[in-house]
Image (cartoon, rainbow, N blue to C red; front, side, top):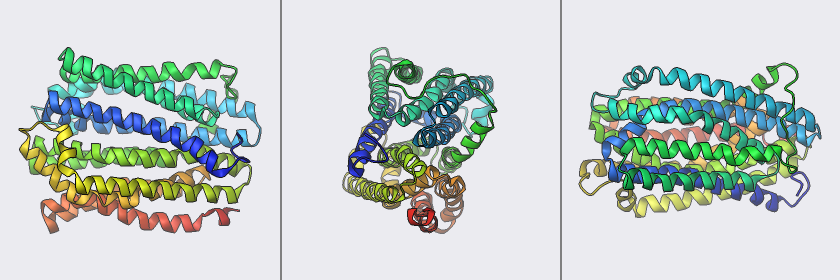
Length: 440
């Protein structure tokens, strides 16, 4: 089925459904992690995960930047029927991510305690956070390589394989979570080991595709300069900025939450992040699936088709937002109970107070993600990065540092929703500036 010629709705759903299901698989695995850790390890386990989050944001963000930027370039080359050039980009990308991931994880592993002190972990939290993070850093390189392979598998017209890999990886994580945490009672160590093994599985499932007869992209001699990869990274900068911004924002929120509510505050913020994760990952799956579609149509100069794909994405993410708003407004206590034991009344109350405001995020987040993905796919990385920075760093940090002075604790809970709303204004302005009719 040709991305540049076939029926628009068929192509959209062929790419978006596996992408959404894949993102759901990833987010559900994280949510199951939260369920087992919250119920079998307790508040301190949830807090240990959240205090480590900035490390994952940096590493996952780099993998996303390289994946998105390089796969968009590769997709455009495929659209122009330059298959060997696309394979060169793919090969160089794999070499880059392999060298970077193992080097960076080694450096971080050797400095774990210093890192956690910098993140604001107290004496109670540091031992359990070290136990979790030391295992995770051993396996993260495999996740980073797996993420790159996932993007190139989709560009290579195998979105269903990408979905199956994510689904199987997540199922392995869920099964191992139960086995390690509940059956063997290995606590946070077991949770980290389960997640790590599932990340390795992602790599094992995806890699064989590029040695098969179905592959368009293949490993070839990486001839020429790596400047091409640096430029590709530039095009994926918004994804890196977005992930890093989330990490920095989480770091600042953790400081504020531990000062105002102690470890219960970080645990509550972790639960809220799980609730956000469900809706945002679905919308991210929809927007993310646009990138190979739009990049190929952009290469083929099919601008009217691009416009139709964007309309479908806007409708789909808006429907996701409505469902999430209804769930959070109607069932906040039920959602909180999934992650918290019955005796965690203080943590649960903080979650419920947060939920009164957090639903507003889902009015805007899907539309922001779609516009950002579109701008990346048409090679407007600065515009895409501006949206990413606004919603993930600039506005959240401004609001978390100012609103508590005006509204007390409610100001903390209002920061993220207001950040998403203000970012939407910027996203709409940029979309009007670079909409398909104008780039034509």
